[in-house]
Image (cartoon, rainbow, N blue to C red; front, side):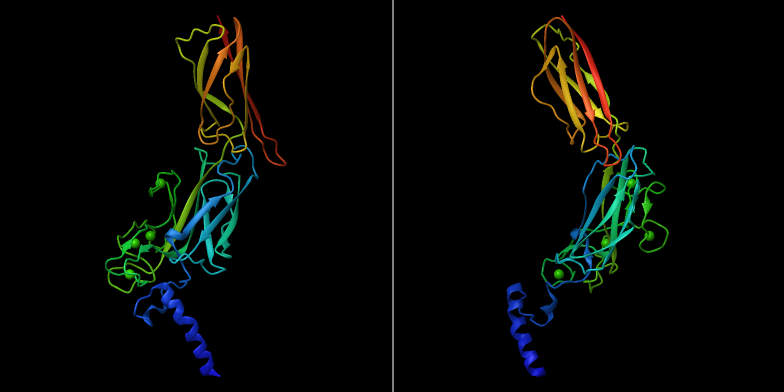
Amino acid sequence: MNRSIKLGFHILFIPLLVSCGAGDNGYGAATVGEPTGIADQDSFSISASQLRPEARDLNGVQVTITISASDRNNFPIPDGSVIHFKTSGGTIENACQISNGVCTVSWTSANPRPADGIANILAYTTGEESYLDANGDDVFDIGDTITTDLGEAYLDNNHNGSFDQGIDELVDFNGNNTYDPANGLYDGQSCNSTICGGTRVHVRSWINLTMSGSFGYLANLNIPTNSNRTAGSTDTLTFDLTDINGNLLPDDTTLTITGNNATLNGTYSFNDASTAYSLSVTWGSAGPAIITIVAETAGTDTQNGSTSTFNLSYTVN
Ligand SMILES: [Ca+2]
Ligand SMILES: [Ca+2]
Ligand SMILES: [Ca+2]
Ligand SMILES: [Ca+2]
């Protein structure tokens, strides 16, 4: 009975090695390309269901945060692996457990609200750095290249991409109460030489949510100073439409622009990539002309959004 099981194993296994191009070191290469069970940095990513929730003026607005985590061969890490979370604004579930390579938590708008309106969300778990396995032996050795050499993870409260003592919040992997920067060595479990650091690091990913305000603000309104607004002449108006922090209004804002005694050339809708707008206007007959800009946010199922109206008055000569 045992013999027949063994035979079946070999029949199945040998073609797998050949298809992987494992070379002539058949036995030693048996683990090449198999799941390692831990996440590596370049397979760890975060996403959000919404990047600019209407979260500055409303509590209880929810955003789903999703983590995808795979090992260095890009196989999902095991079900039940725990991912941890931190946020600098609002509130977030502290952890989730991987299922089929992903897991999700809910972020909810609430205090604290960072002064710049940007909440940094950090996700992390124990894993390993990534490397380019030049010789394909599934081991980091001389000639291989580290592709993600990591310092300790931190919540980047000032969004500058580097750790700032006294500003950012450290996730102290080695427990020495100090931020440890990247060590220039490969840190991972597949290293068996003296050119490596440790066997584990925190793999991590972060995303910024703009906690957008419900009320619009016009800034940098400009019309050419030499404009001679005569009937039938055309001008270009530029302005910024922002929330109170100078950030974009919420993703689901609706923008309506109309002219009274002024015709808009082109159609204009809410721009969720930039606060800057440029309007082409053809003036009507001599007399007052008004351009009306209305920004309407959607709110939530239980909390109304807000309507911000701006009337821009001009005289046509
Ligand atoms: Ca190698
Ligand atoms: Ca920082
Ligand atoms: Ca440390
Ligand atoms: Ca390292």
